[in-house]
Length: 116
Length: 113
Image (tube, rainbow over the protein chains, first blue to last red):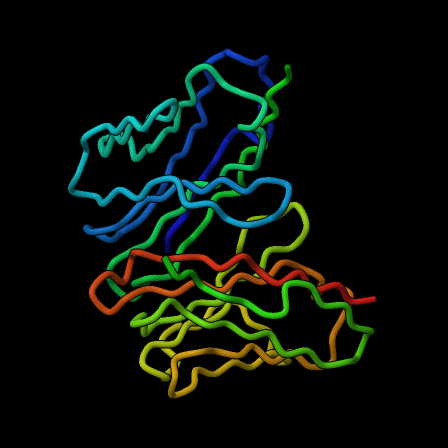
């Protein structure tokens, strides 16, 4: 069985602060994929990043960065210099390679509020 | 670039009525997934189809059924609607060569009164 845990239910920061959203996962698959999605109040799921289990390189995209550590089964997401527009629910998700191929298991989500 | 299309975007139904949600995957995507997201919850996998055959099944109620058609679009049929069925329903599609490259549609917001 797959499981994704986002321990932080809600985070509130002031604009320009850095914030890290934690994600810990469990899977028995040797090959798997990890995702982060942003869900603004409008409801759509905005894809942010996909990482496969063989690629442990950290990635930076503008103010966003991701730290994948297979040894601790974590895939954390950092927003640098947060902005009000970053306010949303962020989901970490996992997709396995075998019988779970394709379907995603989501964490409970972290609600990020960035105050001006 | 073409995205996943879902219709309708909003739907209001009464209890015990039926509803049909439609999903049009990205061209050349042969796999479709359905997810249900209740208020304040994470998306939960319902069912998926690959090449018009059901490929996986999650926590989909017996009152719901789905299918994928020859043009790869999919429909989720929901009968005897209950208040608890009020949710966002997402469809996602993926290509044959990238099963884990899921693209989500904008969702259908179903409200059951």
